[in-house]
Image (cartoon, rainbow, N blue to C red):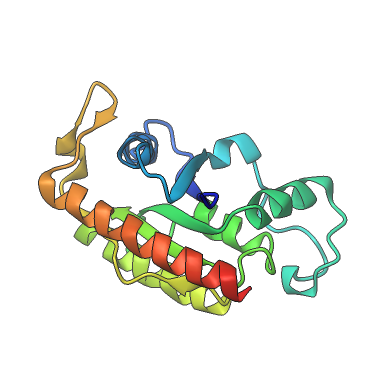
Length: 187
């Protein structure tokens, strides 16, 4: 039996009372029984990545900062990613963009899926993140989850997706497994 693909589920918000945490936990719960992928939740609050302060761009490599090296190791160890992508002011949350910009080569040639919420189900955030993913040479997956009315689906700090949300997430998992396996073999 082959090892499952290692997929990081990265929360896209550090705000107090953020919706990203319940949505991320729902993704983890929905993926708990999968055998072809193994999910790990990554919280930017635990990393406290500052706005990119280093003189060399990440694409130049040669990281020397301990935090950047640790983040690079975390990202490099994954076979793919799911971004929990809220939409802030019709765009990408700064913390999520900064997490992507903090390293470069570690993202390259890996699949990326999105679970969006906020205005238009996070569509504009996902659109912006797709452009960033292409610049990082990632494969942004077509299947995605666009959660409409997210606040009405949270009770006692727990998100409960509707059948449409759950079905969209199942399709995302399927695409992530296929692309993850294909790209891992090609790398």
